[in-house]
Length: 449
Ligand code: CS2
Image (cartoon, rainbow, N blue to C red; front, side, top):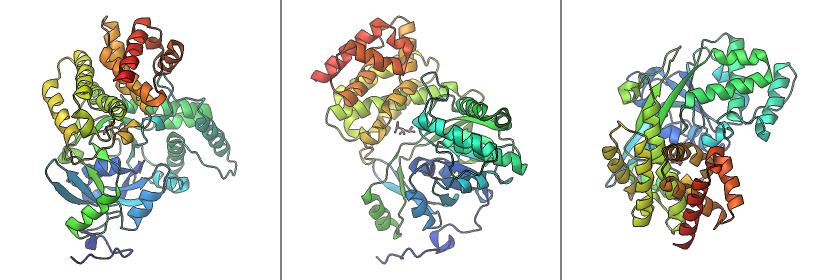
């Protein structure tokens, strides 16, 4: 097969994306695989896709931006079903920029044409404390505050904010100066009530800069979303698979499951793509959707990442096929289900087992294991709290927590140290001796099986 060389500036027509390049009206922060398999895919499939281009900025590493820029930002989504692959070319991203170009980000965000800012900055990227507020004691947040205060005072400093929210605040400031209309800020991370959380965190950050800065936050609209599509990190073979199937050299393809879901709640004061036409759903109350997804899918992922690794597995499919891991997942789900009364959980659970079991996804446990304590706090702690309040053992949740402890620290049987770790997760659970005992017992079991 002859393979077209990837010459710079081939033109999007030659890359299977015909028509004019859509104007930038969405800015995205956190350009990684998930943004490209999810929000960029919904935007590309929307009925009015021609009107909505995305300028996307990476978090820290420039690699994805550079690779995308070399191919006019057009890339291939590989939808990997259990029995076959489907290849789709996506053209909704029109600029891809390394995240350390903060001035470019701020300039683009200040454009009056931009109506939406989407974020995938990871759970840990919000820099929250155990109470869910912005952690003003975080060293990067502290450094950003210095820079933001200096910039607000008009000082000619070279430094720029490092944290995502610091950059967003600078962008809102520039929007205000440019007289741009109100923007919708849409968090697409696995964090409950993510719109409210971003609003609170930004307000806290801005309040620590100056009262004027705080006023800027009020002009924005904060949209909460529940996002879902299992997407894995690129591995070297993916480029070859795409090349063999499509004849194209794509340096930045994305591999994701065929399933995808997006539930949103909130206002878009300056407009938005017709994402419903691509399958997104708008609801008044997002709470039940996000709780179901976070506690069942993501909770089980975090449990499997730790427990599966301890048992020598490498991927989610391997771990969920192990009867011991599977029983742990079911126990966790039984506890979560008791607090999700009224939703169809039987069908959801069956579908999850099938999604996790997709043997061709090669979804690495190590990918999920990153930031496991932050994830536990969002995915497992709320269920544990509810179970304990109802007078039950919360053994399923305790096993998930214990698995993360053992995966991270080894066999930890010192009650004091364990209580300290639990305290960082949730002071209430740490102060519950019955729960500490259940976690200790789970640590013991996991260390001996
Ligand atoms: C995973 C999620 O890496 C993780 O923490 O649990 O990225 C998960 O694959 C997605 O939320 C699925 O929608």
